[in-house]
Amino acid sequence: MRSRINSDTVSSVANSLASVDAGDPDSGKLHVAIIMDGNGRWATSRGRPRTSGHVVGARVVRTIVENAEDAGIGTLTLYAFSADNWKRPTREVSMLMRLFRRYLLSEMDRCVQNGVRMRIVGRRDRIPAELRRTAETAEATTREGKRLDLRIALDYSARDSMVLAAEKCAGRPVTRESFVRVMNEVTHSGPVRDVDLLIRTGGEQRLSDFLLWECAYAELYFTDLMWPEFTPADMLAAVREYHARDRRFGGVQATVAAAG
Ligand code: FPP
Image 1 (cartoon, protein in one colour):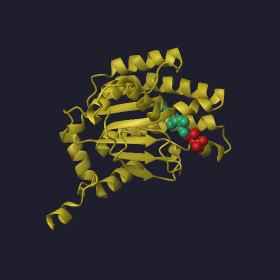
Image 2 (tube, protein in one colour):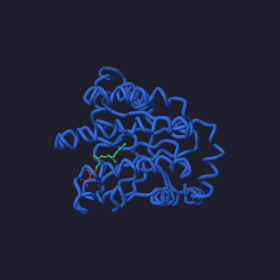
Image 3 (cartoon, helix red, strand yellow):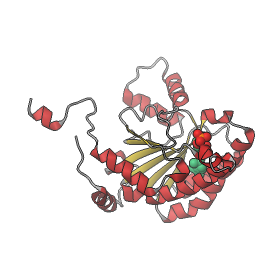
Image 4 (cartoon, helix red, strand yellow):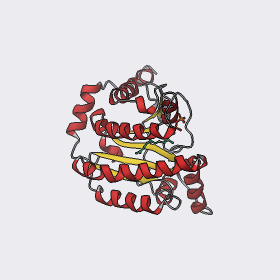
């Protein structure tokens, strides 16, 4: 079915739905997931340390979150740190953990004011205790937010969450629905929700173990822009392209079906 929504109607739909919980799949709002790639390359191409790219990347996260609702987004899942990112130099990992904590601390109040609910997706037993406690505080403080469900994937692996769910299901009959219920329990991810649009910056075209179950029918959008260069206008361009795509979910176009 081809959507005829343009950016103006996107924001008017978003406004009229402001009282509905944006994270609800029936809210009519999109679930957009972003792989924020390219911080390191952006920094080194300017003769700066990789970590400075992450600092600028965190500022970009703030502007993207501020503009998400206007783009018709109800759930925004950001890939901040994968389970494989522990392989990076210790200095970079420690800097990232401090940056995530600083981001949560500095954004918590703003999120409450703007109706943004924050959740952390992923394992919690390997991240520093201070970050874990701050994440719990951010989740508790922002839990009433209904305008945007902001999910930050930290120490996340889609394969690990599916393996854990499969272990829990062992010996029981499993359906898609029951498997999703179990995944909700094991991934600390809040409701598992299908991704509508997956954006990856940084020029690479792969999923890197991100939301593999949820992306089964996601539209994929790749851009050569590095994450520190990505703007709200770029996000809107991706959402516009999403609405111009023909999503058939394995079926045929409505007009083709009508013609027999
Ligand atoms: C991948 O790019 C990026 C990361 C592993 C870190 C993502 C972190 C941020 C965007 C900053 C802060 C985020 C939050 C949620 C506050 P890379 O640096 O590996 O890029 P490269 O491929 O150019 O090396």
